[in-house]
Image (cartoon, rainbow, N blue to C red; front, side):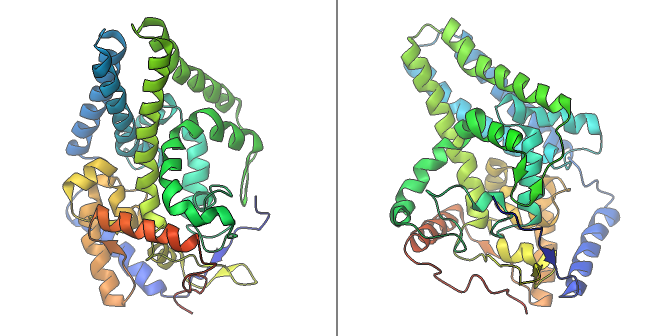
Length: 372
């Protein structure tokens, strides 16, 4: 963990761009009399996904199905867990789903039930990652451990030479890590890079253990008790579920910040980033398949991570409209707007990124600010 104090962003650099962009987005919602929160379409999507998730679970556990069908539903459960998390829980935890606190709190529990602490996610994701995107020592997401190098600012090790192959297998472990290790480590260590947390409220101690036990009971305990298969088949199905949900979520987030096109700026000796926060987000974040309704549904709008990082308090259902405003403003001010044409283009860029980082200390000038 880093002991650095939090870096500061330079407000003077291109601040006009930031003000204009914010004003245009605000005008869009005001002039069209649109709420920044979920609309009816988003609510219907959420109800359908939650219904499919719960219905599939009920059929899997209590349906007395043939073994092949059970394995198929375990796999489907993995995809549905990921879909619910990105389409419902993620927006809720960011406060973007609704202006009503009880709604945000209720929907954020979809994370908790599925084994990932919403409380710790707010700290590691909302605070550390969104505030200091791709900054070494401050962004939790670019420091997954010594086995994986996804930033040119981290040490190159011999093991990294093959990471463009084995990295994709490690993504299948993402949700297993959350469920059994990551949340506990972060909660009791209570330090995420420059974030030194205050004492956790007692309520959060209770919720952490309550939901972990609930998750173990729902996805392992009850299936072992009532499903008509050997414990080996139940464990195998459980691992298949996590492999799919883990890979689904892992690759979705990796394609936003670990591709060839993004940068990894470092603060100067005074701890100052050369650009303002908005410009920094545009340097370090990439879209893929912008405008695709299918990609938007499957990723919960996270195929448009640029808009998400700039306006995390706005519901993802609005990102397609916002992307037109952001792109137009970037073109006017000659600010980079990184958007890869498809999922496969982004996946290819991620693969090449991993391969280069596994062999070269710094394969391009990623450490220099884009604007000086």
